[in-house]
Length: 391
Image (cartoon, rainbow, N blue to C red; front, side):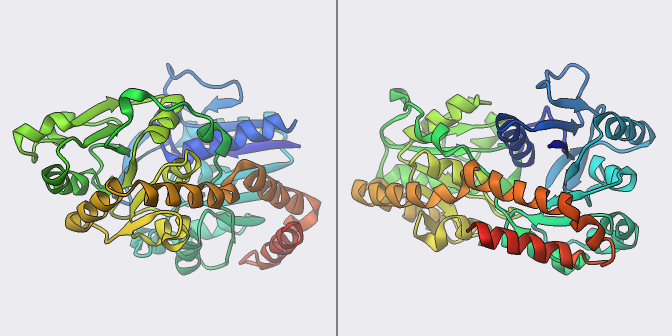
């Protein structure tokens, strides 16, 4: 199958959507499909052979973060050229409502279009206000995917229609096979994320650290990600700052090794998360996960059965939960075992097959059915029925 995938965010700035698209493309190519990914990218960014640059992106604040998007007349021309040269059997657009390549592709494309919605933002006034502009493009979508129930809820409340829920995928075995690094083992907490993005929650973890260190002074916090390291520890007492080790940006291999090494992986994110791919990666590595009780995180962690949850933005609760886990190896082993079993549902062998089932449904004629229904309901029903038969 000839598959065109549209990435809305800059390829050279790491993020969950980009990683999902990269891994989906790799999975499909391994299965023998022809895949081309259109993505914003700076001219000097090294790209995989299947990625086509749509030009440089610009930073736009959105949903508590900064998205690097690509939009304009030059981008529209590159979209049309990519569509013409690719002659795709199906086009898969991620975040079609963002002012980026996805929306441009919706306007320009003909034929079956699958859209994946990643955003969870129940109070998006911008999305509501933009609906009259988005509606003609959204009507061209043959089938909709949401990465979680909370992303689906955002779609339903703001844009109408519905979507089948297919989570983000992970190569579970890649993380499970990683070798721990001895220097990262022993009384260690781990955090991976953008340091200077408040919603990733590092400030909450920093506020919890003094209580953790007061009871367990040998504890270390390993932080992987880009941002201002000096500012990140500015609120800590001077004598505690040496207990925080910044690793900078790490490779996928070192990320997996970090997750295999730490005693507890902490995800203190404060909001704006529709899924939680880092939790799935941590579970794949067999890590003990401690996460804020965001709805999306609770769903990934099976309501707390596959990892511990603490009250969102409550540093005291985070510290108490971390101390209990650090003091209880048996509990950590129990959670790691449960998580390793639970996470298999997120492996690409399952997620990739479900996405392919959507592709096959729309290419089998559901696009023409969906075009007759503004909400796309017939296509959604067909997709869900096909996935039900696969289960």
